[in-house]
Length: 266
Image: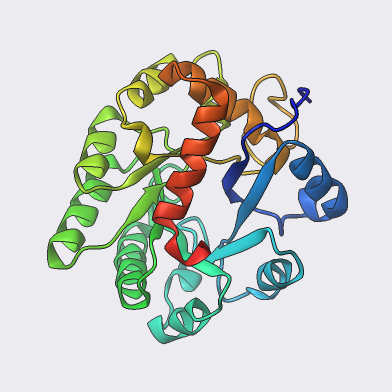
């Protein structure tokens, strides 16, 4: 792990999965290493809000942890169907700062397209009612995602982040035109991700977040190993290089962006 200079600007891991076994097995170490890398806050994601206890417990035990909850599009079809009031009731928790992750994944989950679309729209409606932003997962569904986000925004405004953004420049433009945010993950550090770096280089820096999506997508030079929030520093370093700004400035800017989007976390 890289050495952290003293007094470095803090940074926020805007998307991780601290309830996954790879991280819970060494949670004290995960949190200690995150702190040593200047990670101020972590947003851990409950991928199935029908089983939220572990995620909620983490947020209540640790001041630096917030959570979001929803139904991930790769969850079983029966779980994509839910009562909005059940999700709304969790939104009332003081540490729940966003709805999701939700979205469309037509790579892994072809058979549930209709249910995914319905679930995504339902998540957005819940988020609007709760006055919370939405966390969007998009894979092999750029046109469908763009259409839904635009249509729902026209009905009434909301905010969201395109989590772990690795989609097309088309979806990037569509999201930015609606005032949404794009989040960098470890993918941005991969050797074969020059096209993605080029896309981000054209994004307003005020609309960028950083995340690990840990335990997945560990950045170079840790690729292939289990990821964790401390490694968000590598993503911030690459982000600063893409925007040709000082790394401390980039860390501070993405932290500011986090609190601009997730207002409940202030």
